[in-house]
Image (cartoon, rainbow, N blue to C red; front, side):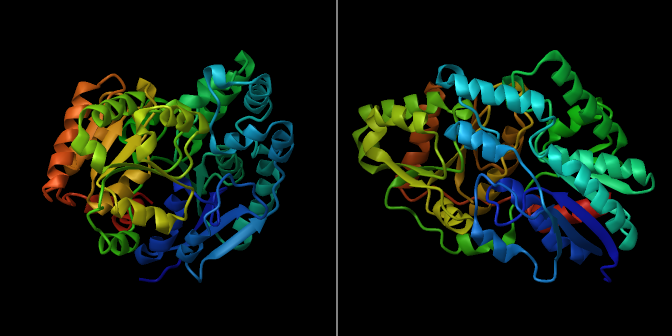
Amino acid sequence: MSTDKKILIITYYWPPAGGPGVQRWLKFAKYLPEFGWKPIIYTPENPSYPLLDESLMKDVPEDLEIVRTKIWEPYQLAEKLNKSNKKFKAGQFDVGNNQSWKSKLSIWVRGNFFIPDARVFWVNPSTQFLEQYLKINNIETIVTSGPPHSMHLIGLNLKKKFPDLKWIADFRDPWTEISYYKHLKLTKKSDKKHRQLESEVFKTADITLATSYTDAENFRKNGANAFCITNGFDETDASTSLSMTENASKFTLSYIGVLEQLRNPENLWKALDNLVKTNSDLAENFNLKFVGRIDDKILKTLEKSSLKEHIQNLGYVSHDKAVDEMAKSSLLLITNFPNDSSKGIIPGKIFEYLATGKQIISFGPNEADVSKILDETKVGKHFGYNDSKEIEDFILEKFELWKNGNLLENTQNIEQFSRRNLTKQLSEIL
């Protein structure tokens, strides 16, 4: 198939940026040529990424055209004001009593001065640059991927200049519906501006993509022509990890990724603390592993409990190493924000978890989209943040199976979430 239809992908995150957000369009760009599309990436030349992962560079196709222009971001100033502002780049915050006055000030500045976000200074220069670029290169289709939602404003400007341009606005996370939006300390005027811009993007984009079923539904209610294409796993990553699958010498519950205060499953820690105290067999064989960045305050609390002896904290590792650590686990943990408005969040790593065939324990609001995926693939169980006794029963059941060598790998019904199949879906929508 000749790859003659060009598609320009406007994204802030691109390797060597780390984290799950990068992988969505990295993988689409990898597989789009199989479906008759030639992807071109437009990304900043000098971005300020919260996480780096050099191992993702090897996934960038050698012949992929990448166009870069300079960006100015105010984060350098914010980080001088307060070290913990580094978290904001990744959309994380200190909450409640953990907020200092500097934190409060920085959050207020971020929400009210930089609308929709601190990458807004790249919007006008990018619009001017791309206006010429699209004409010269005869590009008729563009994608904007947010957050940062400033990327969608570039799309909005270009669509106004070229009404025939086909514009796909890809929301890896919602805009005003995201859980931390209400923590931004917005004035009425700022809140109105965020909502106005979001609404304009929904109504102007030809297609809006969501990463979850609930988000797509919410976007449609707000006037978008929305479709859901979830994130997924890449068979080429998965096959290397699956061949390494081994039964760990301990019953290992692992959390892979960034764990922040707003998604802290305190009822799980309570259940584990209780199990370790009351079940000597489990206590002897139990390992709680963190791979990624765990909030200092969560770690301190755990280290004051009986779980202290069982914690293995590996810190941030490359994506490849993270996939290996998943494969060496017995049970994988996934957490989401507790509020109902987060039902539609499907953390990207669930798909990599699925690819390992390991059992999954999940926490979040009731009737979450994650729970739908776990039911469909039969690989685990989703709990609310109030359950406790059921959590203990679930963990003990898995421990007994592990002990007898019967904790089976399960990979049924997961091929629908492979990156190649998802790219095929995308090409059909295009």
